Length: 296
Length: 298
Image (cartoon, rainbow over all chains, first blue to last red; front, side):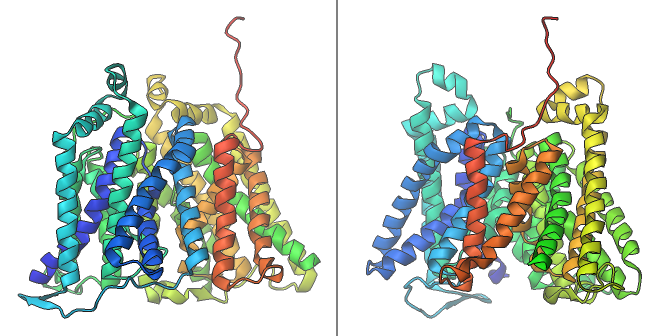
């Protein structure tokens, strides 16, 4: 049972960091950025390249996250803003194109063989029936700190209030004197920075590969949708819940209910997220906790 | 060289049928299907599996089209209330789900190895005669598909679909059955895509899960956008351009020394850049959609 929980904590943390950024941008700019998960891949490769050039893991990671955040603002101003001006459909296809270009570029430069970040190997500890590495503990702690920080900024700071105002009603926020362009920039900085951090944390626990972010696309969207459009707290809760569901379903022995069935094959693991996503969209597209938000 | 050009012609026609199908969904109706490859895969696997049990290829085509049509209708029904971004994510998830099932159900689908030795069309002919006959067959299929699409989009049903794309509530308020219109167009497009998939699997005599990756959908999106969203002729033109572009980049290593990995990523990169460039500078594509204009002053 402990293994289910630690598994869910690790995966949930990564999904949550990505889902928060996705839901912030989607809630504010009404833009479902399919390319969002590529910021994670970018961050991981940035850290791999910088540590390869001789920086320590910490310095390389921080620099890489800053780079990804800055890049996202440039990307928004040069590409996404122009795409959004042509309508939501064009923006959606454009985001798909940006994601494909990013993956192809990374594979062209770094090859498709996975890279390792310079993480010292360490012995795992036993908690109940689970084995946890110090790396995984670090991952969950850093992720939770970042998530709490994001929530605090949104709730209590001037910037957070401004973001929530724009999300609730962009036009009203504009006539109330808020600078929408500057707030959009800040949004991209925050959401891409969180995604970059998620990518590095995941790569420390596994490896850097071109598909690192893309493999998370569907669980991340599932978390954002289940959490409700634009709801940061909802996305976090949903991310951990989905990760828990994924870990649990693989450990249920269906043979004890129906003859002829057994455990679901581990290779079906991603399917859990897909099925949850489709079921969620079919049954409650406004999210579990979300209110119906005006769209368009 | 002639052999290569004939083969390229078959490839273009197969992609053109696929692009016409995607254009009916995305361009005409505004249904963002990011899982188009699922319909194509159903067609490919149907023809392969039917062939293994000794059923003829025509049976495989029909089984595939019926299965894909039913799946398309189910998607249309399931997603009837979804906005375009959620529709895109849901269809992507469904396509990935199908790929996972294909990967894991080895006994039926051959798992990761796929199914090879699919009997091709015109097996009783050989050499150039067979290549010409194959091209002619797929050419006829393309013409039929394009005519169906053209007749559909030019008529009342096409106007309803475009109204749904522009403003769903308006279409409903005018008394059109939006859900039924969506289900019907999904079923028809899925059947068309399945036929293109069946033919492709027969032509290369192989189908495997690697053909079901999301990139296959992305390639067809590029064709539709480059050609011009909402225009059937544009879909065919875009398919021709992008299919040729994607195929000739295979020969890059003859000019630049690159690893196999780099060639693969460079070919994808070229397609991605073309799509983004069109979206940013020529959103309406090479052959823009022509709308009936109406002068209100008259």
